Image: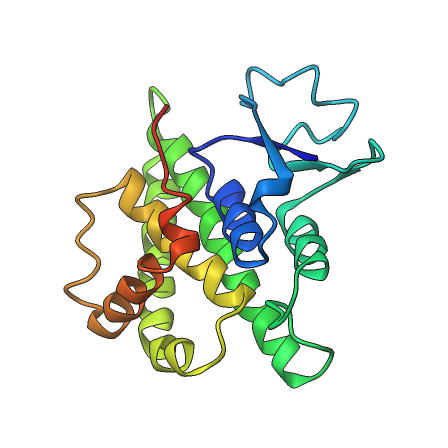
Amino acid sequence: MMRLHWSSRSPFVRKVMVVAHEAGLADRIERVPTLVALTRPDLDLLPLNPLGKIPTLVLEDGSALYDSVVICEYLDGLGGTPRLFPAPGPARIEALRRHALGNGFMDFLLLWRGEMAREQPDRRILDGFAHKHAAVLAALEREAPALAAGPFGIGQIAIGCALSYVDFRWPQAGWRAAHPALAEWHAGFTRRPSVQATEHLDA
């Protein structure tokens, strides 16, 4: 068994688990609940991942992999076909670009939420995140037809998990009305068994 340092709240962990389910590997991964925070690093995790972040995957030989990008590609290599990471070439570059967009979206959503939770959040920072959020949604609305038409892969997983995290943390956001093509694509994403098996839980 591999062991995954895990939280049901993390969009990056969810991305890894969606890949694990898509690759048929979920039953080979023991989930280890791990709480990490800027003010409370998990001291047991640091010897495995000096960055103190989740997800961290501990392999059967005791070695550890991080971050989610590396873990996803490793799991994809263990699974069957079709692969979620295309072979080298234009299709792979496009998949990696979408993966980077989804990952970057998740990154600033977490930072945005952290800033909002401060006793005195900086309005300039909040406004900056709001502008980025609008720009990402506009870009994804334009890209939604291509997301639907292309083979399902790591780019779609990262983007879908980021949008699902918006729904989890900002259920009142109402992003679908102004982005109908993206909303339709995301509805299909949420119907995949791998996505339904990895729902966020605030626990």
